[in-house]
Length: 334
Ligand SMILES: [Ca+2]
Ligand SMILES: [Ca+2]
Image 1: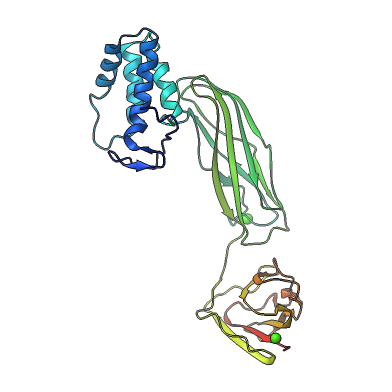
Image 2 (image 1 turned 180 degrees about the horizontal axis):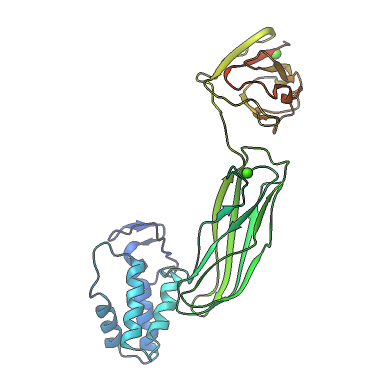
């Protein structure tokens, strides 16, 4: 009953006597109850009041009850039975230590808008991004700030941090004027991972920080496919090499400037011997590497992106997407 370091996870179910790292499920509940009782008795509150409070809070509980539900009804019972006592605040402190109570302020998943006619986030666009903030508590929360961050270069946020002086009890608001700027240099198909960190002060919880992770992909993938049987062996010092093909069926689009990429994953003893070529359905051959990969330890990544193609894929601009795409790889030296 002194497992002060046991923490509650609302996504976890806790069976009787179930073991978790450093504690068993029962201790996550018995510790805050016992510690609250010790504190209150130490302040001169009769132990019978604590017993009454705990027993009263169990009336009316239905099936599928969570420890968080129990913590909330315990506080409600404390407020009802002993409105002038320290019971509620002592229990609240002890429940909070274990993360048993929900955060006073909750943050919704973001909503993106102003994405142009296609409704898709594209390179060069500035999208409006908004979050819902909801005060779930009975106290005013203050000094609210929301900071967005991402490790993706070419992506930034303005009006960041977004700040609000206070949010009244049971009130919600939608953040305004936060913009996600995606530079033209950000390639289509890039996955933008970003985090929203919320910080606020609450009379009951103190200074609280929490964060939400989100992601959005740039552009819309029209067609992409992987070879059915990769891992072909590349013969040493053989100009013919190996070739494999993918067929795009019934794709009405044409290839657009800068919207085509080739992913390769080649394990080879000497990368500097490799010649890699992409051949389009129309028969246009683009040399991606021409014994130019000697400086790389491994050849796993995109042309362009991770590797600069020897010849620009822009020559395919306007060609049909449908048809047979071939990739040829040869090793030209012993
Ligand atoms: Ca768009
Ligand atoms: Ca070789």
